[in-house]
Amino acid sequence: MSTDKSNKLTRIGVFYDGNYFLHVSNYYAYVHKRKSRISVSGLHDYIRHKVAEVEGDASGYRHCQIVDSHYFRGRLNAKEASEKSNSLYYDRLFDDVLMKEGITTHYLPVKTSHKGQRHEKGIDVWLALEAFELAYYKRFNVLVLIASDGDYTPLIRKLNTLGTRVMLMSWDFDYTDDYGNERVTRTSQDLLEVVTYPIAMHEEIDNRVARDSFAVNNLFMPQQNITDKRTKAVPSHNKSNVIQDKSDNETVGEILSVKNGFGFIKNPPNNLFFHYQSVNGVDFNDLNVGDKVTYKIEKNEKDEDVAVDIELAQ
Image (cartoon, rainbow, N blue to C red; front, side):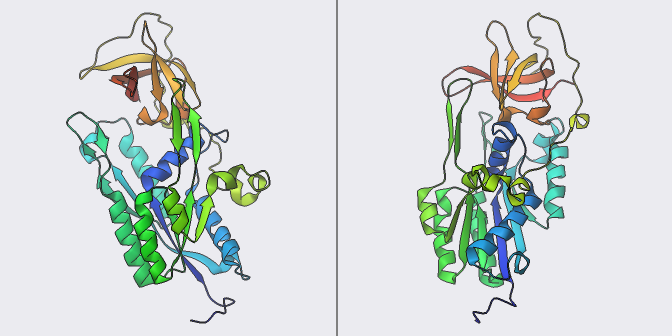
């Protein structure tokens, strides 16, 4: 191969661990001070700029092109999704975003255990197999992996044998919820050691110099009022106890407070804590104090009652 890059494209393949990407996007939407989701188009633009920078490509951004991109995630089957208010709508809305950016989607059904817990199985193996096969046939110069799990380490080692340079885009963050539980997200050290370009995106975003750049700010979706996309519950001033009028231990209650990705539902004598990941069919940021919601009660890791499967009451 010629070493002259002046008239050659740097071919980039992008592979998303979708559940991880959603987790990161939720963090920036609900916990981080930016209070905004990550923009897929902005992220792709950032990738092109970053590859041009680390590759030392004098021809720059225009010669660094994403030629293939793939998104892998488990999701609810049609029956379960139809039982969640607006779940299918939001799934399809995000599918539209991915299609607009030319991203190929790969979904596996989420498995539900007899205890009602959902598990995502096989996504990392599927991503690894597809990434290696496509890197082999399409000869990416750089493969960008959006993930943090050490299970991808064997994939990176295989890609290294092909001479494919790997850029890992990952986020490390931690915070404490209102119950005092520390929530930690960390990237596998084994994974960081085998990639060509480890990019700590949390540092890129929060860096004092970089955070004011167009490329960084373009990573996030613009703030907008989307409350018209939901059915707004009528605030209630009734101070009585919650009403048990749903089957399968489902309860109707009232939002008492919402902040920083967490909230409480009025449930005398002890109000129930809930996490943004337990909200279905509506964006957490669109919940307001006084909204009527349906929910179920489960035990957390400290054997305390918490609210899950939260939806706006119809």
